[in-house]
Image (cartoon, rainbow, N blue to C red; front, side):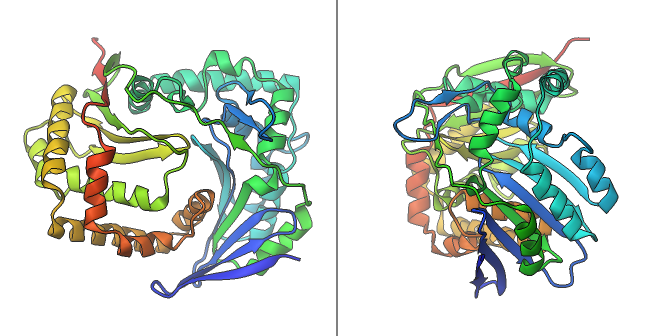
Length: 427
């Protein structure tokens, strides 16, 4: 019998349901009245950084080839009979999947035949099928994908930056791995990783839209079998404080030079709490958000254009402050950002700017509740971070200017940074 709990936000007048299923899976259902479509995500806390792990504290760490989480995502769509995409074609659902640094998710959206589509999702993800022949075939396909990404300027700029900042942490490795690393993958390794990370206690099913908890439970009760939970320990990599190299440059076919610049943050604990992430986002908005005079100055001087973006980039054992975009002079942008950080650390963020930014981020958080795709993916993110979906709006009301300024001065070291530039290849 499943345990169903309603989670309500009095502030937002919104609600969803958290279900502890008998199989060991956590299910989160967010009904949206008057919506025609439904969006479902079935995710596991397993991503590209999980190259070393163990199932008990007294066992040695198991090390596996880079890119195996992404490889496993591709392979799960196959079966002895019809693959998952062919099955979805019969229900009319639109399906996809993705692997990130810290998770793998399988998803679909539909306007009808929800139960049939959910049955396909839960069935193919819980029934792996790997053979030596199909693994060898996939090695060739993903090998081509890896080479293709090497020619994608924005992607290459980011990973070039990560390789410049990080010495040992696997976040520096492309999510798909390397041609050499995926050549080491075998069916046995895939099954070993699957049995650890695709245990239902390490997963979550999130559904939002035209749906009820009863509809989801009816399918889950039929498809999912109880399994003993597995406790997984990710390896915490002891990363040196300093960056590996302050500057790196490549040449690719680009119309305009591209840069990725980042400050590497020292992390003493594996996880970054949501409150810390929200404080960091306030800092980035204050530093060079699109409403700041600093952003306008860089724009007017032609040092950046509207492709300029910022991100507080963090995960298990890593955190950095990243700035990306197109620029004819990436080194000048780096210097200006460093100067801007030092100046703001000296003066602090003013009360008026703090109030404006906090209000802006609150509005952005509230807007996500109109988008069922955003809701379902936010449910996955919040669950894997150990937070509730409504925590963001509550925390934004509690954060103070003093704690934002304290973090601004403590977390960003202007001397601990790296720049990656992609220059245009000569014709």
